[in-house]
Length: 239
Image: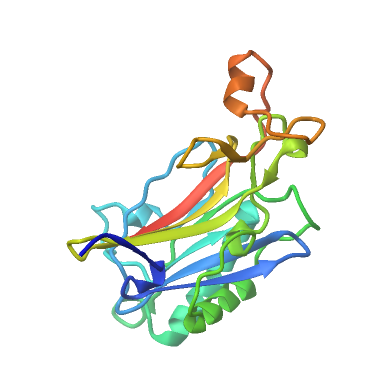
């Protein structure tokens, strides 16, 4: 049997749903971990990460499983959407069992996406709506949806010459039977290149808008770069 591509939702217990606010160009994406939750770790990098409930994912901590993971726009304000995810998990009876109550474990991470649309950030109700969609969705929508709605790429010259980023997913089943899936929100400083021929397929545009600037070449040539463009890449790897 050869390796072949599958949907990330073919991994047992994984359900994915989005809430998209096109008016404000923001949204959130939830990864529900059914069947008793999922063992989870975390890697946090960057100068200004926005997260919630990630410290308890350290291997020395008491909690060993999560019930859902939230990826959201709205910067730190968007973390409020995790309250709605917790509400949904409580209704379903998901959570870490304590003496008198189950506590849903919902780590979350954000991107800064206030460059497009009207002012607004995902709310608790939006997080709840994403869970409802996850419960009934058969396919995972990609592109400018959910947490990827307001994502941008190629911000070396600021957002004026940037392009839309977004949310993408891929998964594979290997010959051994192992299934691995990823879901990523791309809101990056650099360009996105093809894995086949290394050509730029999204990124910083020239001032005229007639082609790509090539961020790496632009920086090597000594041009000043935009360092305040709030770049973040967040995602989930499921096994």
